[in-house]
Image (cartoon, rainbow, N blue to C red; front, side, top):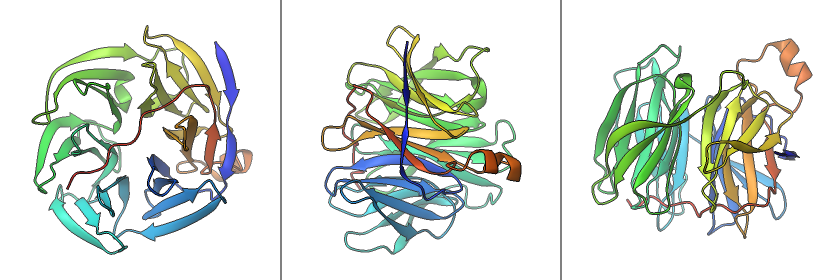
Length: 293
């Protein structure tokens, strides 16, 4: 097993950093601070971080084809238009349920935006999993979800890997790229009981490895295609939230984390909690898919 150590590239110490996504057009990494209600953009060329505020808690963001952004906010799917930071509501989702918010999400190979929700108190089964089509219509794909988290597709788009954190599993679905329908849910792999931490955000490399952030685990792990862990990236923060390949060659692995839910004493012991980290693990990722709407 290979063990690596991540380095800090931006020490903004955001409360709940999440959902990194590489924007190849601008050469920037976009990610969110959920309760901070902002989209952050990190520019590796000079280390600059800029911020775009959002109207409510933001779970995840993606780049729109042609410019602007799409995001899952507390009450539904919102977008910005090219050249503007003004948000407008595209499709309300769970707007009548103020005790819930969106969490992780990504675009599928056809450019649809999929994201899942959860209750603020994390009560079991309160969340759902939704798809936003290019025409602005939304469809619920799953209910009974507790903490909807990492998702990623195989290169052919025919399999969706998905995490509902408390299950300690990565599940697989058959995925219909033509329609965005999911079917045949089954367990793909399970985090062993003796492995500390909980499965959170996820991405895939070009060799079929799944990179998963471990909340309460101080690390990111790579599950090889055979299901075993063959790479561990140590992070000097316990609440590691998500991962994404970026950079010009897609060989930089960016890692978000949080200080949310840490006590004052724990925060003092983890001064870099909430920062943005990076490591070059010797693998390459796939380009992020843009929202087609």
